Image 1: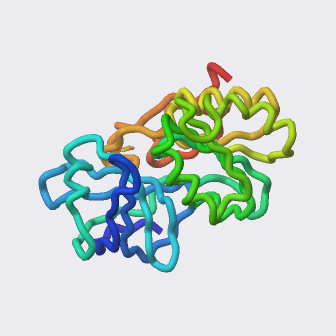
Image 2 (image 1 turned 180 degrees about the vertical axis):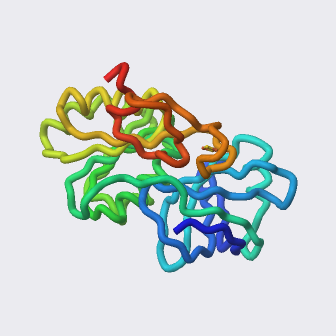
Image 3 (image 1 turned 45 degrees about the vertical axis):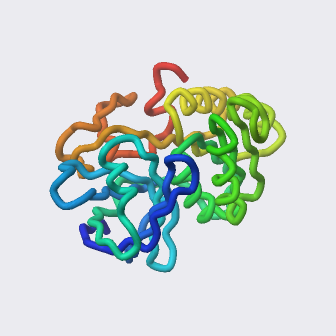
Length: 250
Ligand code: FES
């Protein structure tokens, strides 16, 4: 059940250039794919920021964020013991059964919700994509405890295979009998993964990102077109079946 509450920061540390891990006390339930709206400061920032649930255990909630503007820059100055206000959990989650053979495909901060998904699924495999070694090494370390097989690709070849996550996907889908693919990252990547999944007849769920004002389905700022109607990412998503949102191209 969603709730709004003040809580304390346990840890706020930089794990790669401009990427931070934020751990807070949180006695909430949440499914992989759901997100949290964080209030930054008291009055300085009017809009809450949505962050995917990257881990939820022992009343500790972990999120990752990239420093992209004044709000997240402010967040980097918060430290253990500081108070923060959360609205959580929000949205829907990935649809899966524990133990299903699922391939997770993620790029950038899109890897955050997939970490929690890996922890819950138990034997998922993961394709990690990023621009360079610095963007992927800490993710590889994070996934070591939860994913069965890890493949890493970088655009510049500075770590793992050189290229994009989509390069090795067709072969992986041929050699392993995946039941589902969950993908989270840049939209162009999600579209390509969805197209390959459709070609191989594998169910694909994507995690959509949109700027959100209320996070509660009240303001329409996050509306997107789907095959049937306009839907709200914050309330109807952020997880959608790929066929529903990429209907015109896959
Ligand atoms: Fe307001 Fe989705 S953020 S409707």
